Length: 226
Image 1 (cartoon, helix red, strand yellow):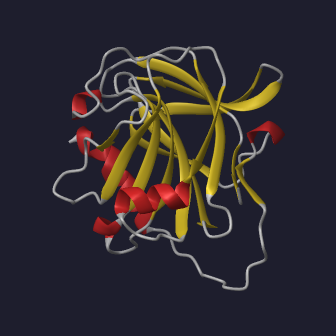
Image 2 (cartoon, helix red, strand yellow):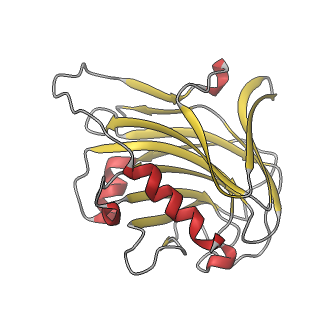
C-alpha cells in the first residue's frame, strides 16, 4: 500500500486547509514564500510519504539554500499559504541538482520520482476529489514542455495532479537554473478554470519508487505581479 502514500497524504494535507478570503487585502507587489537565503523556514513543514527526504538549510555558492537529500525516500516540504493569483500570478524559483535519477518511465508508478520539483496546490476542502496540483519537475526522461497526469492519479480519486517538465536530462547537474511561471495562466490552461487562489506551495525530491538517491538544492521562492 506504500504506493498510495504520495497522493493520499497530499489529499489529507490539502483537505485540512481552511482560509478566510479578505477582499480588501492590500496590493502586493512581491510575496516571498521561501526565504531560504535569510535562513528562514517559517511556515514550512515536512510531510513524509514513504521513507524520508531530509530538508536542511546549507551554504552553497555563497548563499543559504534549501538542501534536499533523498535515499529511497519521499517527503514533501510544504508551505501552507493562500496566495491571490490576481495580485501575484508569477512564481519564481531557483534550483540545482547534484545527480540524475537515470532512465525512468515517469508515466508509471515505478518511475514516479524526480530529482527536484516545485508545485502549487489548490484545495478542494472536504471534496478531496476536487484537489488540484501543478507539479513543475526536473524530469529524467520527459522533454521540457511535456505535460502528463501524475502516475498515482487514477479514476479521479486523487483529484487532478498534472506534471510539467521544466528541466530534463539535457540540463547540467551542478548548475543553478532560474525559473518563472505564470501560475494563473497555467491553471487555466491545464484545468480549464479561472482559479484565483492557491492554497500552498511545496518542494519535493523523491527516489522511493526507483530505489535511488538524489540530492537537490532550492533557492528562494516568491510570487510577483509580473
